[in-house]
Image 1 (cartoon, rainbow, N blue to C red):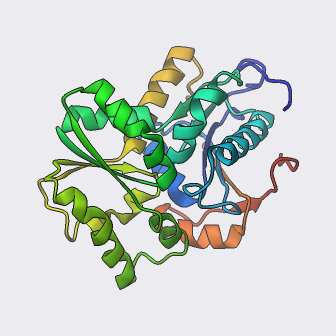
Image 2 (image 1 turned 90 degrees about the vertical axis):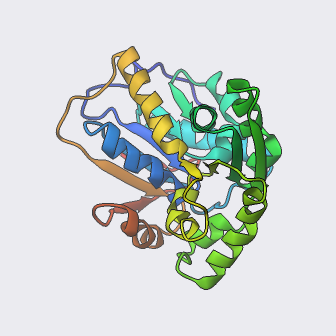
Length: 280
């Protein structure tokens, strides 16, 4: 891998110092939406690794490789902070790469787990198979609240359904009920979106999940943590000349068409091939 740079070395000016946000696809848009809401003066570099989506069925070695490739590229793009807007990467790679990069890197699991532990006592977690198998949410919630009861369900079909724009199909509601019912049978009081794609499913889940069940969207909490970190490091932006640069590894037109439903305007999307191709 390339030589690492310190944050001060790769922040040339407030205008070019973006927050890097990365995910396997459109899931990270839930984090981007929270940046727009909580950090309205920050510019963002968004990367969706759509050529290799989904991440949730891949091995830990693959996830670590993909994460390093993305972070190497983001350092080249001079980001001042990286938000790992992917629960699978957060579960399997975050602790390793934090020791390898002189750059603040935030993951979604710990902030989300702490929020769940504050809200509930009978907590259900829906996530990718890799995240569930890591038990990252289970351990983090119990660390925050040892008395909490936690149940996890792997939902391997959710990300492909979302990435292929099949939210309105009857099958999506059917499979959602199949995944969630075992948690409802446990009388959960809290449901954690253990994948950043899953908040896109909320209109569907609201059709059958009781109103007494509280939803936890870790995107809200990771961006709140990012705001504190930016302030602590003194690298927050105060600019009004904001922009978001969208980059994907797969089909940029497909991403733009899918993302439009969750963004204020249709994004202009560029394509790169990691790890060798860079953009200005």
